[in-house]
Length: 352
Image (cartoon, rainbow, N blue to C red):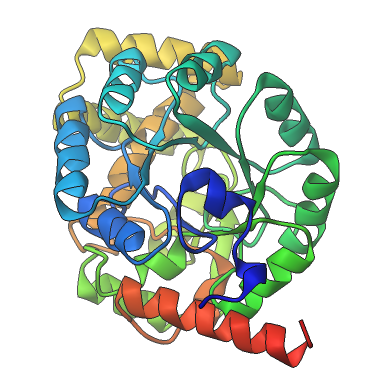
């Protein structure tokens, strides 16, 4: 029987056995990884931002075919077809809708009325206060150690701040890889942890093996937070490609970014009209320049080059700093069993 301290508010809210969430990583968190996580007792989340509507629909069906456990879908609130995607997850009984950026109050209310839980990721205490007031059910507080888009406040400082500020369950993210980290998050007042890189580096992840072994070869000092990828701070593995982006000017980056943005449009079946509509929406709500807009649309193709095509020389590798302490590629079931065992051993050592 699992230690009582590991059965938290998030377990009851999500209907899961363990307070562990696999985040919705673009090009990585598909049906296989998501269903493996949910089947093993955590909460798996499908990454839909890089999927077409039909691909998302298929992924949801595939997960439901593989497991009867709760799972979630990660969404971009500014996608042109967001209403259709919301209708889909409501209709298919998806338990949780997660967001990298805060959804609108109307979206939160719509999902709440339909019985779907909402969980945005935040990087500052004030953001947690704002979305809590809007009625979200939980938040992921991601510290600077986290992979991909990330803030500047370390997890050890951000997490206690957020926990002290809101009454809803808080999950810690950024630097968590094992059972000791889970216990640390609980000690800070969190209801569990959310992890990306640790799930990427499992045998259930569809990321090419060559890319996984690049990750395994890196240390905690081999990452960099770059603004050159899409105009926002993003933690990635430092490579020649990233160094090249860092050295290039906006004038030289913009044409390449625009070409890749159009390639992403073709790949996802987005019409030119929807691309323009989405771009105008992003520019309006995020206060970004046209060059940043092209870079933001370009970023998914840079990630696809590594995570799908296995070409690190032309892509980027988003990662958390926890990469430096990950040494193997267990199955998701083995990983969760290990994390829970380590957490129980740690609690016993502390006399809990």
